Structure formats: structure tokens, C-alpha cells
Amino acid sequence: MKRALLLIGAVLLSTNAFADSHGHDDLEKLMKGFKTEFKAAADAKSVDEMKSAIMKFDHLVAEAKKGDYPAKEAPTFEQGFDKLAAALDKVEMSLDKGDLKQAKEDMRSVDDVRKEFHKKLK
Image 1 (cartoon, helix red, strand yellow):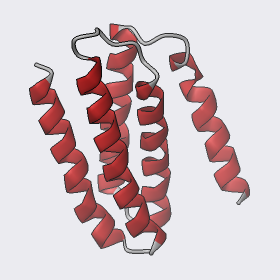
Image 2: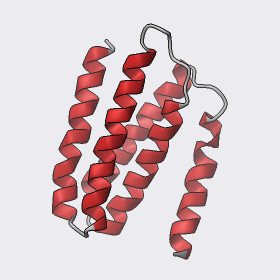
Image 3: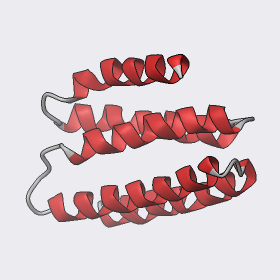
């Protein structure tokens, strides 16, 4: 429990830099964070290790949702972040059941959302 609270605190402190405004550079940093946490989750060897990465990933998605995006693209960004959050929720449910194998399979839907929305926003 103490470890989880420390981790949450570290995540909150590390992402405070993104809370101001989300320009192109901030979005790029968030996307790099997505990539880092996706890889950490995919490479996880335990449920706890994967939960940690998914928790960080989920927090980054929440921060990305707060961003200001061009009016023309804003609905697409919003839809993408909502779908990404739903996909991460599915992974979390598998992890809560202690099913690392299923959680890793559920990560495919996270990757599918990435591909779908990168294509839509190009």
C-alpha cells in the first residue's frame, strides 16, 4: 500500500508539467510517455509490474484529454482518448483478476486504438 501511494505521488509530480497547456511539444511528450508505458506494460513479468505501467499510462491519457486541440481535430482526439481509456480499463480488469496473460492480450486493443487514430489524424 505504501509503495502504491509513493508511486501515485511520483506519477502526479512527474505529469504536473503537462497540466499547464498542451501545445504540440506537450502532446509529443505525452505520446512518448504513452509509448514508454505501453512498452513497460507489454514487457511486464508480473501483474504488479504491469499494473504500475497501466496506471501511469492511464494518468497520461487523462492529462492528454485536458489538452487544447485544433477545433477541426478536437472531436477525433477526444474520441481517440476515450477509446484508449476504455481499452486500458479492459486491461486493468484482467489485471485485477490476476490474469497477466489476458491483460497482455488485451493490450492488442490498445495498440489497435493507436493505429486507428494515428491514421485518422494524419
